[in-house]
Length: 92
Image (tube, rainbow, N blue to C red; front, side, top):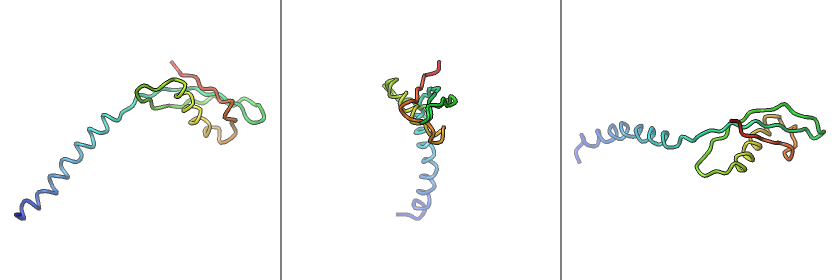
C-alpha cells in the first residue's frame, strides 16, 4: 500500500464520523411530556407539587409514564415522600 493512502485514510475517517453522529442524534430525539406530581410525607403532611419531564418512546402507555414520573419526582422531595402517596397527572 502506498503511504499516501495510509495517511489519507485517518483524515477521511475523521471527516465522515461526525456525519454519522449527527444522524444518530436526529433519530434518537424523543417527545417529552410534563407531569405535575403531588405527594405526602411519611407523617401524612402534603408536599409541594413538582413538575417533571418524561421522555416518551413510541407505544408507551400513560400508566407507565405516570409511574416513571413518580419515580423521577421522588428524589425532588429528597427522600421525604412516601412513594405510595405520589400522584402524577399529565399536563395538557
